[in-house]
Length: 372
Ligand code: CUA
Picture 1 (cartoon, protein in one colour):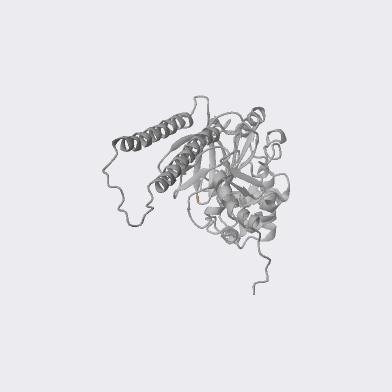
Picture 2 (picture 1 turned 90 degrees about the horizontal axis):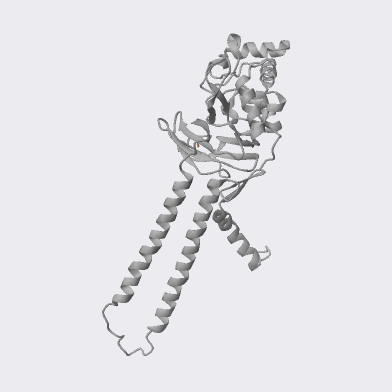
């Protein structure tokens, strides 16, 4: 016999309704963050939301109308005497006209609403901040084309952490390096496919400063689920401080023997350990390192995530050594080669050097706005 207590009806109902409700509201808890297209701090989401409400209200009215017609008809025309043949008739012009005209009106209203919403959310305003986003297995590059690096080449670029000003429209131009990915930060706006060879621009925005979660939302390989990013929306003044510091940034020279040893491995590799130079794939602003294969590491020490959001905070710090040693062992499908022969001292040196790569305190973006 089943000895488990019988669930009450209300508990069963709750169990059935909860997933449906979260589906309907389009929100899902992600660690301590909530991914929600119902986040009304984004103008994009507000527009889509009111469009959805209008369509849902119409759907409910149609449901009520059709149900009423069904019950009315079944009741009125049901056969009472089993012997009698039903009334024979052909057609009803008035009813048929109504059944054609009413759906046409409904579909027209929905078309107009959809076209209007698309016309509002799709164009990017002239004063939007432009960010070029490139998806790659399994990380994101965020490049600010309007912010050239002072005394260098290229423009400000960050890996896996997108810093934006709150209260301003952000024009995201999205593409991909290898396979198809998709960019989505649900709290801030819509989703777009990132396709190699194609560039698509759309807008995201929020009026609420905070740290938001983003994900790759198209299956792109073994670490699709580990291809995450953070969007840090700062008050405009703080954003300006960040972007000016990023434009002027020059990596500090190594100051201790350990940092120097780490710098040397980064720039030249270590032949005795069979390790190629990190610099051949990664860029650090203000140093000879100019690789573009992997994420830009210019302000690595100011970041809070590792492995495209795979780890955060203290975990990210703790995972750096195992990550460098064999990244694919801790993040499936990671394309960074393994450096198994680097000694623990080598890894300590590399970590010491990478930790020095920091933006000035007033320009760093972590810990200044709450996690949403
Ligand atoms: Cu990139 Cu999924």
